Amino acid sequence: MLLEIRDIHVHYGKIEALKGISLDVDEGEIVTLIGANGAGKTTTLKTISGLRPLTSGSIAFDGKDISRLPGHKRVLVGIGQSPEGRGCFPGMTVMENLLMGAYTRSGDFSKDLAEVFDLFPRLAERKTQAAGTMSGGEQQMVAIGRALMSKPKVLLLDEPSMGLAPMLVAQIFSIIKEINNRGTTVLLVEQNAQQALQIAHRAYVLETGKVVKAAPAADLLDDPQVREAYLGGSLGQH
Amino acid sequence: MNANSNIRSGNPLTSLRRAVGGFSDGVRDWWAAAPRWTRWTVYGLLIALVIVAPHPAIGSFMSPYSHWPSLLFSPIGTFVLLAVGLNVVVGQAGLLDLGFVAFYAIGAYTMAVFATKFGWNFWGILVIAIFMTAVSGIVLGSPTLRLRGDYLAIVTLGFGEIVRITAQNTDYIGGARGITNIPHPPTIFGVDFALDPLPYYYLLVAAIVLVVIFAKRLERSRVGRAWEAIREDEDAAELMGVPTFRFKLLAFFVGAMIGGLTGAIWASKVIAIQHNNFPFILSATILAAVVLGGSGNLPGVIIGAFLIAWLPERFRGFQDYRILIFGGALVLMMALRPEGLLPARRRRAVSGNGGESGDTEPGATEAGGQAAEEVAK
Image (tube, rainbow over all chains, first blue to last red; front, side, top):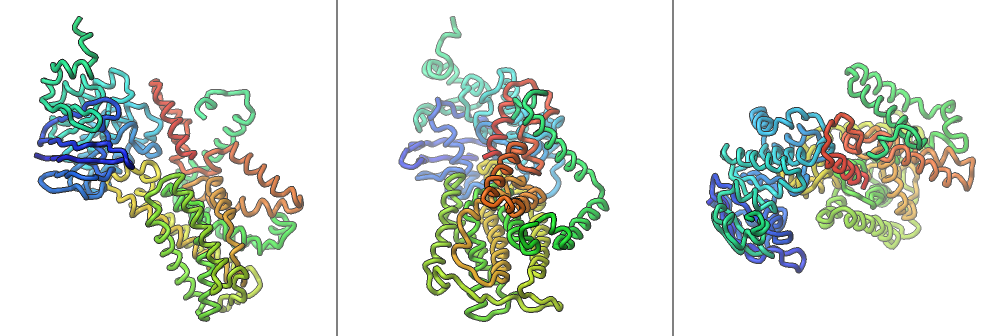
């Protein structure tokens, strides 16, 4: 397993946000975490990338325990995250954002930049534009592209489709699929369960800080309970 | 702000603001495109201007009511150096520090104590003062830099007051009476430091030039990029592999050193210091200088500090009304240039007016507005 999370508990003050979550991500997979608001999806990602401290439990990456490793060092072992919302640096240009992604690396990034621009041709057209002046979809592209610049083994994506127009959502998801095809493992947090389950290999369903279901994504698409709760019920069938 | 940019006529304030903005942006673009020799010429002219500045001919216009060379040293020179230091913390790393005066005080008291009690040489104490304030920056920073935004501001405000009140209540450093008879710096290169403010002014100018070069180099380095990332989005910076805590501490460290340097030079000039010289309002004034000038942009910050220091003295003829006029001038400037007189290029870019964006997605303007609001905070 590339990423093994065992029984992690995370608190915000006295409130327990994660109540013992365990999950695995294998190399080459797309794994998705779905669930309602407040289920703990974002907290799970933040805990993996080191922005939130653990109360108990363990996180192992590539066989090494990283539970106590500070966030900025987790980038070095190969964890890249695109944060929730429009998590780019608004005052920096697209190019500067991407170069920040390579902050921990040295040497020549031209190949990596070319790859990002290949995935997101839109960014190539707007290299010198301040990221804060771009549309929501473009900012999301910047955030994902920037995360890729650190050459992560696993890419953590937090609600990449949030607030985007339906056409853009489809585009972002196909790009995520493409990133995975090129060899990057993806852990995807989504409220848009339908789309997420279609591209993912496996999925976990989170409810109030616990994993309530873990199964191959295709099975969950057909699961009546999941359909009821996250996929708009059976309305689509009539 | 975005809404305003669509209105071509009407509000005279808006059109005036645009005219002012257009001018300073024009200057910026010209500067960005200027070849090397032009820049060096401008640097040379600026230095020349600063050197001839104390001349009475200039003084009679700039300061009809007070002794101009004295003003040039303090408050003008000291404010500029303090603002350059605070700009590292507030403008570059984005940490709101309301207690910057603490470092100024520690620098001044270090100079006073080592000179009067141990009789050390001025230059030696200068180094000690910078070291002491750097350490105090770490002492303040390490427990508090886990806080963000408003909370950090409150804690730093408290630190400023703690230092002042401690000075007031510590008999060893003079208590409420302060320390008197601080010796002047020794004669160097035939220049005698005594009551004449000119040598101190030139000493301060030399310090400002060195510190500006140092700050500019930092800004363009890896450290500067890390600070910028932290300022824009601290979590995202950590996710990029920036050790955010360490770099925030470094910003406090550097800012504190500059504050301490200013305090030490100032103490040796004024001979007597006491806790009243370091009130909270001084921190607020320096912060106002940074914000007014254009947080994050050194030329802007220097101009801001100059105006904040100079205007109240220039208006001295209005007697009690001078602070009212000063306040009015501040309000007017913030109305015309909410992002500062000469803002950093990035802030300007984000605060709307991203005219080249042909994007029609509704989210675009909204995001720009949000970002601008964040910057405004």
